[in-house]
Image (cartoon, rainbow, N blue to C red; front, side, top):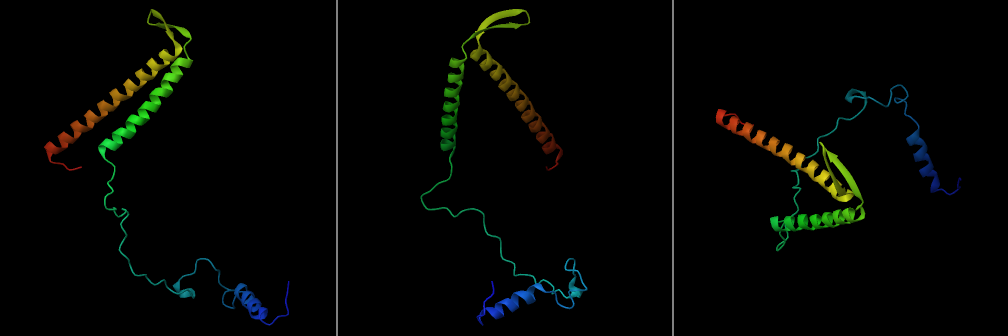
Length: 148
């Protein structure tokens, strides 16, 4: 749409001149110019000190405490326990279990609970072994005078 209004004419001329390449631009590519090819060097901006990422503390408001973290962990544990009890109650079919010649009958939910507890026990054992190993290595480094 074109308009014969005089105020539209300068705007149209500006957009045409901005999209048309100048005489020097026809010979040089627009990518990869250096300072010697008509591009002004970047002026370094004033360095501002980095702002702290911590929020300013409001008076009377405290951060998380050990008691509040324990309360949240307790609440999550109770929810998991309720979900686990629902699982056990819904899976109460008796199943025959055979293990190294021993045989017994257990509800399926209880059997799966024992399997999960056994897996968690293995994770705790290996985690504790790794913590002990790292503690031992740190003690050896302290004795020899090395710093981590």
